[in-house]
Image (cartoon, rainbow, N blue to C red; front, side):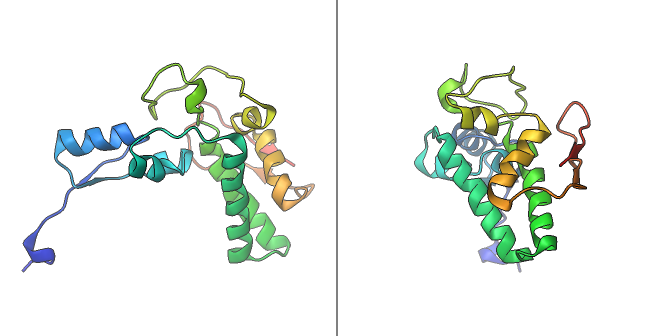
Length: 172
């Protein structure tokens, strides 16, 4: 017999980036839930938006708190020695290679946002917001240095995923 009293659950396949996309997937396809992997990498508060059924315009400092927490968790997991800091930095930079794609709701030209959107260059409402939205790997390293100290002189970084239209290499 099947677990759950014989009930079979269906999960919708990804590209969910907002509470509206989540609700649309549930109602139009009849699935029980929806995968949020890439959407959650770009916008970790998407779960909060779904729970509140509204867009959340997170400030740059609120978004930087996610980075701070990521670094803290990384150092707790991998240690605060040179190896642990290096591992945390690499995973952080991989994550930042996703998060920079977030355009704040307050400056979007249209709703709902889509994972497939490739917005033109934009200026944030303050310098920190602009830094967090930068596609320049050197800015990602600057962000990592806020919490992990200076990168080693021989540090190199190449994103593993191919969501960028060009390959980049960072040296710090």
